[in-house]
Image (cartoon, rainbow over all chains, first blue to last red; front, side, top):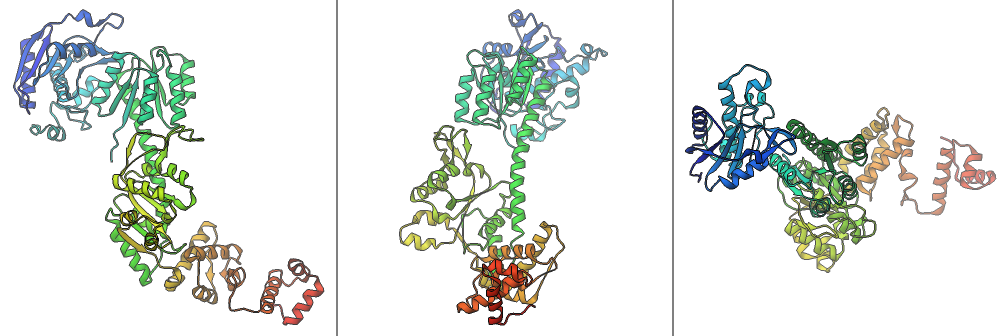
Length: 180
Length: 445
């Protein structure tokens, strides 16, 4: 691949070890160095007060315009509830074959569904979603292999069903390594 | 073979269009967007989409009006309407106007994916259903290809070889020899067998009708063109097109056909969009195309384009050893379709069939057997059940008197020697009939 590196930009507070863990997994999956940066956006510009959610489409556009540069793949990391106008919520979004994507861990924690807090599980889910959105920026579409990280996930249970890795088919599409 | 489903999103809000575009493109669909109903209709005039996802509330033409217009262009279009202002009345109206489904914004992500998956499934099932129907018909007919004679075995071997290639084929032979069955057999044994075999009887259509039939037409291309219509070349995409009676097409159509065969693309009548189709062509004719080329009535370049392989189907009189097999096959076929027990055939009747010239070939033999089963006694096909002695002129009888004798005899047998009824059928009085019986020495069997 001709990409220099992947940049993860955190918007809002993220614990250092979370960002380190995600960048390590991402780097191992795509075999490209990963840089972590901090970004700033006034999220109130993206808030839909009636839905009490943040417009993912506009946020993605903003990340793409303000932070993405060629030949780098950029993912914005958020901790707010994302939506797109047509859907009730999204975990993340990316430009297919583009240079940027976004992902939020807001709906990925167990507590949100009345279950016991599990930070490890939440981090695992977030990492999968970041890799998933990055896959789209590399041109991968949703995959039907149940364990492939590119499988579409509507609920957290769907995320838990899949692995953190690309399947052989998606790997070969990207001419990447085989999954571990 | 997985089909790439195409989606047209129609919504006046840019953010909605963008959201849906990004959502579906990640699922691998081919997606296009239109910001108004007017724009969508102009896109649809140039290009087909499998699913149209349209907002109801739009400035100018609303979604319901657009739905009605799309349905008038393409009655089987799958349109899903969406709105943020759901009322039962609009939902019912949309469904009455032919919408596939009706959804309220915003949707749950899962609902949206399910909705599109269901619509895709319906489209693929409808297409598969059409292809399977064609396939069943072609398989049913291929069974009719019967023959152990040298001439027929040679033809069947040719079919086997030709089926593996993608070359154009011309099938020649007299009318009724089974040229269409040969075409079906080639298709059914080829790699294109899971795609349609589309037949066109060129001789039955005028030049303009044939043009519209082969290439399709756009709505309004001519009087009566109420809808956009796919042509036969388009329908045969991935499969085979069979052009029967190819020798009858006009010089203009010969030029058009040559162009399509060379480029595998064409434009619908009244349209301007180039449509590509991947088809194999098989033609049939009962005429001598070579001599038509020599006398200038058939284009030489088209002849060579079509005549990569030539299969000649022999007439029945040149393979009389196949007659008993064919007779047996047709007896079983028609007894089964008429729900009757199998009937036998009298040896003298079979001998007569083998001696007969059959100018109408296998088709004539098949009709004869069907008729014999219908009018026969239900146990055995006898000489008198076959039309050769009745409807067909027996050239061995030359004098008028002999003909009269045979005819009077047949009518008397038909009416069980009831003199009144036989005389009435012959349109003579009873006295005259008695005189004829006496004159020819006729007696009841």
